[in-house]
Structures are given as structure tokens and as C-alpha cells.
Image (cartoon, rainbow, N blue to C red; front, side):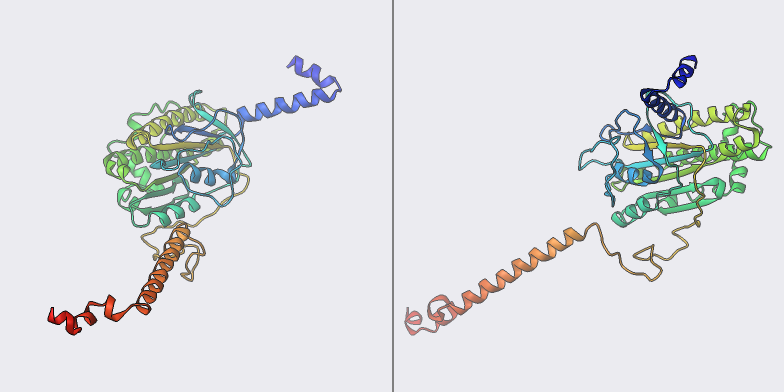
Length: 364
């Protein structure tokens, strides 16, 4: 700090450049983060401190799953992978109320800039469009807001998953609760903020247990998508403060639970899953979204249109267009060739029917 004070007293342009670099390093180390806990070998994240915008997180998830995006992602952190190999699942966990967790240092992490609220609705719609006839699992869950969206086989696998706060609190008193295995220390399950945090930890545990029970879903060719938003740590920080022992204990518990959750999901999908964690202290703008369930809504061709209109563009449009085009060309050429052959045919020489009427042939 003394050397920094000496730099401040020096009125030189190079000093200001050094200060800008120093500030960017501090912000990169202490700001909001995008951390890749697990990823297969063919999905390569480069080591570096390239910041990624919060609004580009859905595009990043889509690219890791092998889908195309409307705008190119100009971000060097993700390398281009093999064309015919894609992960079987992508799990994104958003932790609100903290800019970073005490995770291992050997994992890849990037600064998060412009932390605006985002959803993976576009990725979920792509999965539903491309794999409508398969059995993809799509789960988007925010326990604190009781926001739930399930699609495909998720309605069967997670039908017993507690989603409302009342259901989760009841689950904490049942057999197999995380309360029996977690070191609560300064946390008290009778306090509202502590109970919300423990409820979200219980949800992570139950999701891993249900996936372990339905391992066959990880072997199909349809990719699965999981999006979880946890705000229990934010409530604890608001209630007790960022420097309180409750907040420190909760952060330690969540970091340990997240690593076990990532290892469990990664193993269930046979090392073919990407698990990311976004830690953001506060979002810059509030986000409101209605809860949806595919069981309660009517299946329409375009979920974004209330008039049941077709999509303006489909990913299979080019394939279908080429099939129809060349088939029409081949059929047209075949008709021309057949018509030309019939027009120039000699009935007495080329047709066996007319030849058999010839008297000479009948005498032979």
C-alpha cells in the first residue's frame, strides 16, 4: 500500500496506466465469477481472465451443447470442439449474494461483467425443437421464488421433487435430510433465512439422488438441461451481514455441496456433462417471469406466439429444402427421358407387343 501511495503522488501517464491494470486485476479476482466445475475433454475452456457478459451466458451454454446461436460469441475462453461430439447435459447453477465461493484453484474461472438477469429459455426451446421426439430432461428451478419449469422426461423424473418452500421444509424433517450430515455450526434451522438456505441445499441433494435413480436417462442421445437459481446465501447475508459467522459457515457449506453435486452429476452422465456456477452479488436489474409447466399448457408449434403460428425458420429447413429440390429435379429429368424415349420409339422394332403381331414371327 505504501508503494501504491507513492505511485499516486507521481503525476505521470504511466502511473495511471498501472493503476488501471491494478484495478482490473482486483476486480477480476474479487468480482462476480463464472466458474466451470466440470467439463468433458472435448469441451475445452482456456485458462485466462477474459470477462464474459451476463447476457451472453445463454449463448455460452448453447455453444457448449453444440447448438448454434443468432450472434457469434466473440469470447476467446471457449475453444471450438469436435463437430459430432456434444455433452449429454449442461448444468448451470446461479448463486446470488456472493461474488465468489471457496472452490478449488485448479478449475477454470472467468470474471463476470454486466451481471444482468438471464434465463435459459432460448436453450430450452432449442432442445425442445430439435429433440421433440426424444426424451430430453429440461429443469429450471428457483426455490426461493417457487419458480419451476419442467419439460420432457423431467415431468416424470422430478414429479416427487419438492419445489415450494413449504414442501422443502417438510422434506428437511424426513429421512435422508441434509440436516443429519451437514455441519451447521452457527446456522439455526429455526430461523427463516437459515431455513431457506438449507432448503436449497436439500434440493441439490434430491436432484442428485433422483438422477442416480434414473441413470438410464443419461444414456440417450437427447441432451439434458438444468438451470438452478439459489438465493439462500443472499438472504443470510442480508439478515446477518457479509462478515457474520453465519454467512461464512453457509458459504463454506455451499462450496462443499456444489463440488459434491458437480461430481455426482458428472459421474451419472459418464463424464459427458458440463457443470457451471455463476456467483453474482447483486443483479443490476430485477427479473420477473411467470412459472410454467408443460403439463398445464397446450402444446403449440411456437411457444412464443399465442396464435399457434409456425416458426419463421427451423434448423432443419436447409436439409428439407435440399431433399425436396433435388428429388423434384431427379423426377423431372426422369419424366423427360421417358417421354423422349417413347416419342422416338419404333413400334415394330422396340416393342415386343407389336413384333408379336408380325406374321413372320408367328410363323417362326
